[in-house]
Length: 260
Image (tube, rainbow, N blue to C red; front, side):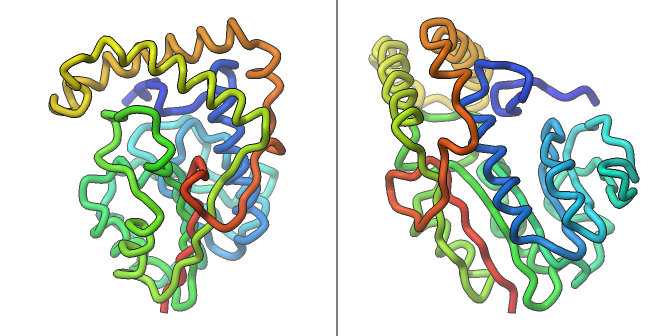
């Protein structure tokens, strides 16, 4: 199946995505400092994280619902990459207690049964294995995203993780002045669009009806921001983001959960 290229699947080639791409890139770079052994990724996306993660692993298995074009055994000359096309949960054919780390970035908010999703991740992790998960911080969302089943606050994600893991470290992804400048401009632009939603339909209609209109407007908004703020948007790098203890002002939650 061909990948549906919505604004949810961030592209490293589209400059209008740079603000979110660099934030996603940071997650991979930070995870690469932590992982080792056998690593499972749930949510390959466009695959830009593979070359960052694979060199730090004995084996890297990456899963996505869409075909990605990643060749099994490729990347960084190690021949240790395996791609599996699969809808999750459950994790079909993945042995219990077989991975040292699981990473999943910007995925859990799309999963209908998030409890089963985490239960399956716990199952495939070895004792003492760790899950590294990122997801948008609900407190910083500018509008409803109909592609998301739900979004989480810090306490909500912590409670969910602790129902399946023995502990969870609560970190978040923050931005510097350049990031906040873009965020403020984006917030104003979104407000200009949503002012027409006088009946608050974005929260009242079934999310499936809103997905395509949202995606079109989201993409147009990103293009407009790029055109009017080219230097700002294209100049953003992963170094403009940082990870520290989470609070309500972080853009993404970056949690690390450990299995018994």
